[in-house]
Length: 563
Image 1 (tube, rainbow, N blue to C red):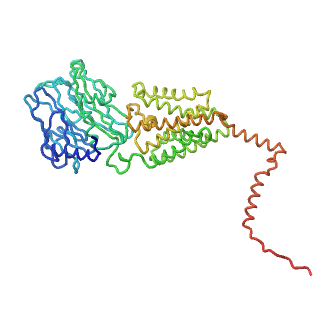
Image 2: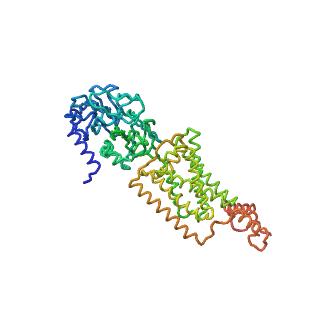
Image 3: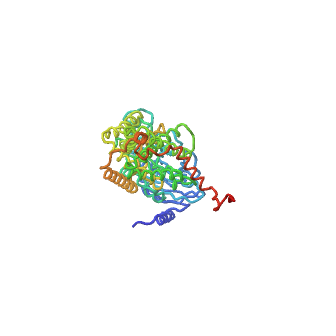
């Protein structure tokens, strides 16, 4: 039976009160989660009793959604015996005959904070996460440390050590690099996406349980990469503001075929506390206006672009000019986002007008189709690298990436060089309908927006090449993808059927105008030949307007009668 989110949250709080409350004692069992309410003033004492003798290590961890919690070995925490954060854990190395472990929990927030806690046991042959820590405060640190920006997310963790029995000395971390040392260990990094458009605390609490133990991580997470002991223990991912993501690392000992999991960490790549641009309202008003207007023009182009050729040229010119102008102005100036977006809109309009003007003056279908083909090619190439192909290690190299990307993009105009009308109609349908997808992304999260955004990030950030760009693909994305495909297919089909009996492209406008002018000047039988020059026509119109404001003369005789 599925309960509404409010009921689920209430049940979670009631469970927290039942299992420990906001102060006092929290009795735990190994491998069992417990929800607990924490506050700033009264620490909760978490206790595990009757620990089996074959257990050598216990990782105790606590998770909250947005408020930092403090976990410590002592009631009065110190730097070397505690951890602070939304996802924190401590590792207890058990002594011989020890059967009880105790930890203390409290929040840094004045209000009560809902959290979930678990203790996970490991045996003597299991590797010890963070056992060779040299960077962080704890002597043995099983935590994953996460930092995020609007562009990427970075996770880093301390190297693990080999497992050992109770009472023994831990193996040396730097005694050698052979198969009998910790250098044989391997680290598998996993990623797990929370449901899209869901920022509920209880949803996080229920899903983080799937990423805490080794078997559950393997069953639910997506393995992104394997790190050896020779590699740096930090990994970068593409940032997905507003989308909940959980990361964890499994350290594996290939000699004993044993594994252990670090403490999972989560992020939404945004702030819950900010009044503006928080996790609930990420898109700025300027972004919504810009892409909504673009979507209206794109939707028109999708169905009528080839018939209204100048509108089609304006749209494509706007897209390509606006895109590269935004990259340029972001790289060379420090202007605010709203200012850059306004300038991008102005530059896009100018670019669209210039493309229309170049067609009117030059009448080169080949030049216009090259630009339109490049727009479609860039989108197609971005779609290719949006797939798992984009995360291949070979494309970490910028030269390899851009040569491959450009080759795929240029392939589109080359393939359709003999049928420009089909190329133009395809570009109208695909690019025009994708502008609708970008507009939808301003109001509802969809991963399809990152087809274009990941390309933009790679152009704007020199180090984005190191980030893995995996994204979720859930219900919203399937719906938006269906809308995109439906619009693109409908637009292409409608235009192909309507234009099949028409000329491929309109005639050269400038040459047509010159021929018409010459015809009028030489053919005296043509009525248009006798049309007065423009200057005389304007003067005549002004006289007519002047007559309208002239005071009417009174009727009757104005001169005296002759006698």
